[in-house]
Image 1: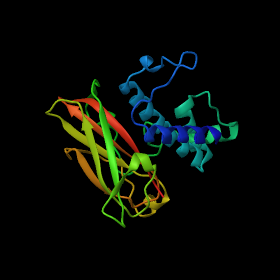
Image 2 (image 1 turned 60 degrees about the vertical axis):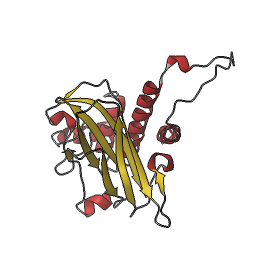
Image 3 (image 1 turned 135 degrees about the vertical axis):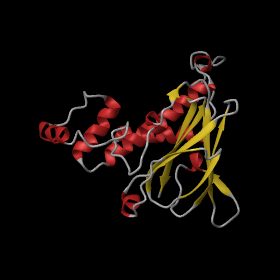
Image 4 (image 1 turned 120 degrees about the horizontal axis):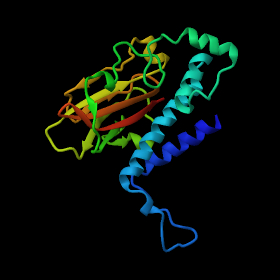
Length: 231
């Protein structure tokens, strides 16, 4: 649990600081460590920490011990062993359809590896989201607030990229939790051709995410992941 809180706190700090800070060398205050990284590496680090925070929380909150072990193994490898009594049960469930992170598929869920495109990389993409304030005309940056209350509009999830046009933009909205499941609202489809922004409403409490891919000439040249915590 301490590790999950540590990674979540780091993810929250990184979300509040999208630009790489200056890290001063304590042995020589006139220099810094920033020559070791650049903004792209820092942004990539932040992206992965956000992903790890979500995956760790999902593994920690999973009530089924066998599923929880599988989720932790996706993070730490097969060396993360289950007790013998649960390992046998895990093998019995190995045929269940799952995502790349070991989470059971939502109905109609797709993954980018199944969409007939190849990964090329070389470009960056960034999702920004603003949550409507119901008592004013303003809005708040979702990465900075860290979560959104249920029942709010998000205007909008907007992607920016340095990829040269023309290109296609593919979006995925994935939600989790009993609220979405009980309402038959689980999602996970990949939708091509939606343009640079999508509008969503915070209907279900839980930890969700939005992903985007920039597809050019049948190849993914950039992507981004935005966690969405709804309370």
